[in-house]
Structure formats: C-alpha cells, structure tokens
Amino acid sequence: MQNGSAKTTSPDGSEGHNPDLDSPDTYSPDAYSPDAYNADGFGHAWADISDIRHAKTFGYQGGMILSPESMLDEMPFQSQTKLDRPKLTPLVLIAIALTLAGMLLRLPWLGWTGAGMTLLLSVRLVWPELREIIQELLLDTWAAPWVASLGVGVAIAALVQFSGFGQGTLQFFRVVNWDAVGALAETLGAVGQISIAVLAVYIAWRQYVISKALTEQQNRLTIQQNMITQQQTIDAYFQGVSDLVLDDEGLLEDWPQERAIAEGRTAAILSSVNADGKAKVIRFLARSKLLTPLKRDGHLGRAILDGRGGYEEDRLHGVRVIDLGVMLAKANLCNTDLRWTDLSESNLIYADLRNADLVKSNLSRSILFGANLRGADVMGVRFHYGPTDTASPRSRTEPPNYITGEYTGAVVEEIDFTGVQRMSEEQRQYCCAWCGEKSRGTISGGCGEIKNQLGR
Image 1 (tube, rainbow, N blue to C red):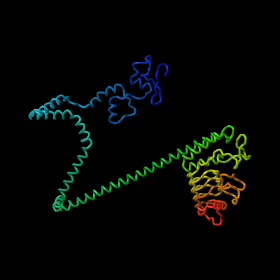
Image 2: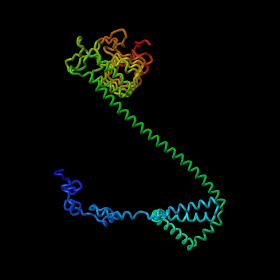
Image 3: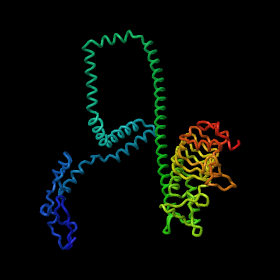
C-alpha cells in the first residue's frame, strides 16, 4: 500500500484500486460505477437481472460479475419462492376447540361440525407443503413409472383378451388340482427354509474366513512393526556402545565404569530381542573386537597395537571390553548367522543352535553343555587350541595351556550333533572324546574307534 491507496490484482494480472480500501482523500462518487470498474482493468461487465436468471437456468458463465443494482433487483425475485400460506391458524384452533367440546358434552351435531371444519381448515393450511411433496415425489419422480406400469398392465390385458389366450388360461386353472399345488408349495417352502439356513451358514463361514484373513494381516503388520521397533532399539544400542568405547584418547580405553555400562546394556538388549536380533548384536561386538581378550598396558590399561593395524590378543591374561558371561545361557539362536564370531569362554548351556551358521566361529572354553547343534554348519569352528590328542575341556581350577591345548576346549557334553554339517575329522575326534556316551551316537560317522575320555 502506497499513498493511502490499496491496489488489487485482476485475473488477467493487471493492477487496480480497490475503492473499499481507498482512503477518504482518494474516494470519488463514481468509484462504484460499472464504467469505473471496467476502466480500472477488470475487463468484465456487470451482470444484470437477466444474467442472474440465465445462470440459475443454464449455469454460471465465467464472465459474469453481479452488480449492486442487479443484486437488489434479484431480492424480490428470490422472495417470490416463499410458500403462499393462508392465515388460518386461529380458525383451526377454534375448530379443534369445538370438536373437543362436542366430544366432551356428547353433542354429535357439534362434534360433526367441529370435525368437518377442523379437517377442511387443516388441509387448507398444510396444502402448500402437500402440493410440493406431491409435485416432487408423485408427479416429477414417479409419474412416468406409474403411467408406464398402467400402460403395461392394460396392454397385457388386451393381448390376453384378443389373442384367446385368456380362455385357455382360465380353463387350465379350473382343472388344476389345488391340493397337489398346496403340497408342492409346502415342499418348496421347506426347501426355501433349508436354502435360507444353508445360505446363513455360508455367510457365517465367509465372515469367519474374512475375519481370519484380517486377523492374519493384522498379525503380520504387528510383526513388521515389532521388527522395525527392534531394529531401532538395536541401532540405538550400537550407537550407545560406540559412544562409550570411542573417545578422543583412542579406541577401547580401559575405564571399568564404561565397560560395566556396556555389559549392562548388552545384557538388557540380548534379553529383549529375538534370535536374529541376538545374532546382530553378537556379530557387531565380535567384529568390533569388543568380545576378544586384548593385551593391555600393565600400567595404563590401554589396549596394545599389534603393529599390523589392529590390537594384539592375549588369550591368557587379556581383558575383554564386554564379557558375555551367562548372557547367552539357554538362548534361542537357531537359524542365525554367527560366522566369524568370538564366543570363547561364553556360557551357552542348553542354547538352541539348530541350523545356525557357525563357520569360523571361536567356541574355545565355551560351555555348550546340553546345547542343540542339530543341522548347524561347523566348518572351521574352533573347539580348542593345540593338538587334538592333548586338548581337553576347560577346568574351573586349572589354567588353560594354549600351546598343548589342555583346558582350552569347549564343554561339549550332552550336545545333539544330529545332522551337523561339514564337521572335520579333527572336530569329530575331539567331540567324540569329550561329549559323553549320550552324544557320541548323534555324531555323523560314529565314534567307535575313539576312546571316551569323559568316562560317562
């Protein structure tokens, strides 16, 4: 707005003044005239009363703009659509009073007179609405169907009469055995009832099928939502652990409080996710070297580099950032991917490892007592260190010897080895020697020539 004048933009893009917003200094008496608007850039003529009625009949035309005069002229035209109702309400009330008086006083002549007057005056009073209803429903909507139905009926009656078909039809009805027809009708009625019952059963069955399908869809949707939520939880865990072990001073700093928090988070998430979620967490920790015992500086506690771009391992005295301990006891890990994971010294008692992919995983000094390895892939799995002849399972009292293999092996007693895939000869000899009589019979190839070192 400039100089107290308001500008408007017309449909064709030109600018003009809006007299409603102009200041008193710029107001002129001719501002509301059609010529002033046309000259100001609108490019449209005012519509008169004929244009309005034309729009009512044939629809609005895009170039019409209603002038104030046309709108004033239209107002009487709109008021003519009101119903022409006679002022008979007082007379109707008087007639009702006479009727009620005749009924109470038991005067028939007064009752008949009041009732007649009430009926006539009430019908006359409500006649405008009745006329519109009759016009809209009975004449405009149903007049044609009624006339058509009447015409069809008259035409059929004429054809029956003049074709002679009617006489034969009447003769047929005279000789019909109506008792048999009644029996047939009862039979058809029974069949109809049975059909209705069958139809009801079918409808109920279809509703059950649809409800079941809907329930399955809802269950699938719930499973997908749970998977999304679980993945978000796992991602948050990854980020949290990364923030704990990564700092400005280097990787895997040996702060006991940070390691305790990392272990607590790991224990919490492993107990709240499914088998695939557990496998993702284990793979993340294993590939991040957070499960591997690392050699550390004796004074600072920091992990020592191996000179090859990694950290040096120390199986005998190394410290793990996260010690799984008993977090995986009785865990469900079936059909999971655990390749190249370090599960050494972890407690996997009664763990479900059916059909798990354990290729190149490290299970030395782990407790696999009662675990189910049915159908698992154990190619390259490390069950012990050192030679097979001198290797033995872990001991609670004796330290491990990673050169001879003594007390470095996994506890494999009472494991179900049925269908284990790609078991090497070295693995078979160790498992046969230390799995016990119950498990020896489940190992493929048998253990007849291998001595039972467990003794039970």
